[in-house]
Length: 157
Image (cartoon, one colour):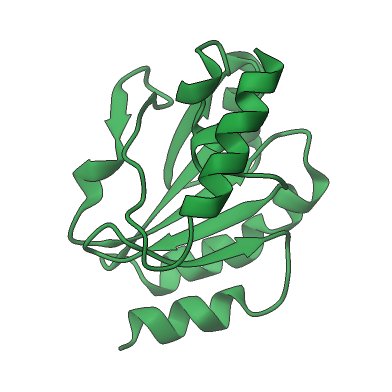
């Protein structure tokens, strides 16, 4: 199973790039309801791949909250917690007061269905900016400068 996951991730890394369509997915939200990415068509979306165990992911939350506040109505953020238990995930969402859509990918499915494999995610945090048509605009790997500025530029077009 681990080899299948690596294969899926490697293949996805070649496909997941600016201009490509963001793969749709369905994951449970904090209320236990199914959230589907395609339900956000018509808005800009940031997918934030993170985990409660990731120090850099946590350090990036203040900047992400600022972006969310600045662009309310034009932007949705979907926090995708990877590899946590439901309890740790819910605890982290509450502790860090994450105001956006939060979903959990527990990896309890076949590797080809695990969302971070399908998106070719190799490091955390990774943020993927998606346009209103569902196409990838840019991918930000790690907590690096320039994310806010790029997001502002895209949303203020």
